Amino acid sequence: MELIKTVDGFLNWRKNQSASLGFIPTLGALHKGHLSLVRTSKKRCNLTVVSIFLNPTQFAPDEDLNSYPNTLKEDIKHLKTLNIDVLFLPTEDEMYQRTDDVNVPVTKLFNKLEGASRPHFFYGVTTIVAKLFNIIHPTHAFFGEKDAQQLYIIKQMIAQMNYQIILVSCPTIRDQNGLALSSRNQYLTAEEQFKASVVHKGLMHIKDALDRGQKNPIILKQAFEIILHQTPEIQIDYISIACTKTLEEITGIVEGAVLVSTAVFFKAVRLIDNFTYSSL
Ligand code: PAF
Image (tube, rainbow, N blue to C red):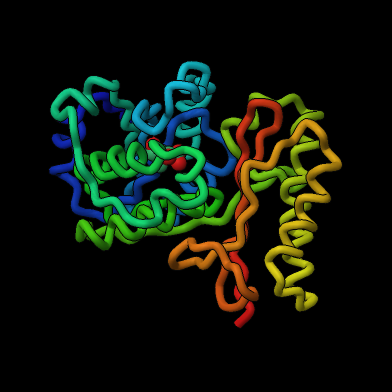
């Protein structure tokens, strides 16, 4: 595994490569979810590049940028074991020194769901992902389904910007109790993580009700809220049943493909999860 810290260093490496190249952008604090993206890239592509960059522009001033888990030593160990080709580890200056204002296309998806609670978030994500795509020049990019809205927005950005990149979405990886893996789970004790698995149980309750033919979004969401209220440490930020294309909330009956998604606070820790359901 080569460790490259500069844009010029990466471009230099890249110009000698013509094989398919899978790319996994990360904020670091790698967990089994990230590692499964790496394994999928290794299967699909000749070369695999991972970036670790804690991107400041996707954090609001009151969020956890300064306390975000940093496990760089372990991350490097895992990536070496998986035998990736390059770990791109740029500094903030390296990523942002050449431009102070970058505009990527904004879509109506930006201010829905996660964007409603974190208005800065998708501006920061698309800016950094566009810059990374321009540097890494991947043939394939691997993103996890846990961040469903991010996945939709990156898909749109690839189309709008004419990036010649195949976007590969990979299933959410869960712990033994169903909690979706996230770097932020490290903020919770084992007992709290067990309690937080109620988020997945609540979502699966909605799925079971949909399977049984319940199509009223109000009733479906109420069932989730009742289950979650049994864990007083959890505050629901939102529970949404939305159209997978527009992310508009379903107000009539649930039909076609929908994204059922939620964000909750477990004390101060923000956790998200979702599933896609198609009644067709
Ligand atoms: O999903 C993430 O970890 C981040 O949003 C990403 C895609 C690495 C951009 O900083």
